[in-house]
Image (cartoon, rainbow, N blue to C red):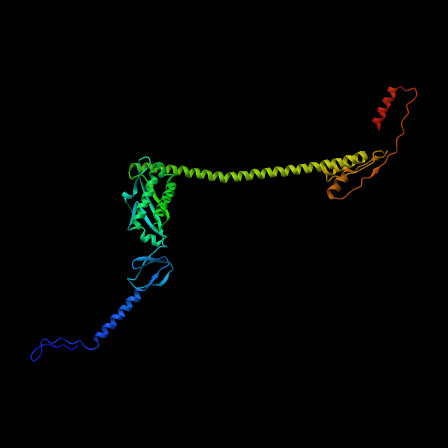
Length: 366
């Protein structure tokens, strides 16, 4: 660039001259910058958990739900508002989390029960955006509206119940009822907010002596409930075992009963069969029964059968039989015969008393 300065021998009023081609470069640079700006403003990216509301001249026209890179007309013709609609968010009622610690907010936490007692209630509301257009344009400040409606729902339910019920078994019932009322409010006002859940962190009397007393009562009730559950568990464990043992005894008795009946029927059939044989052959059957009985009660005994009707004298070598039974050898006992004796006839003139006396003497002699 040439600079002309006034001075000795020069014109001090002369205007500096712009080099040739400079204006063209400026115009080209402006056009390039404009194109870059237009290109940058014509594209936008939507993440997986996000949705984008598209505005044309400031008026809502559509919602982009699909993740990825999308095109729009440059600003100020079209504009997009991106919000994490698929992300579940949490809102604390009655307390705030600061630096990892819970700090109570009494203005939100303190509530009046149905029996005019104070109670401190802390809750967490889990929510997400279900309709981005309604969320952006139906309510001026959706999150403030959510906090106010959640607090109002909890207060209305707690105000309809007594303190003792609210801090003990009624906690779950109050929690469900408060969630239901909060959902109804947001449906009525069409806020575009979906209530995923409402959970009480704690419901208790304000800090102090009353709180300690209620905690002791609550602990006692919990201990009672625990013991009842343990007893019920014991009952549920013992009764099935007892029923099983009883059933086993019954089945065993039934089995024994059936076995005895079958054995008795078998004994009856056996007795009837023996009786029928006895009727046909009394002597043979009686002898057979005697022999079978001897074999049972004296399994190792030697049984010798003789005919008791002969006149021979039987000789049994007991010593040999004893030795043979010990050694396992069988010995046939010899039979000793004696001549039959003739009966002695008494004299004719002998009296009966004399005859009887002689018989006795003869028997003694023999």
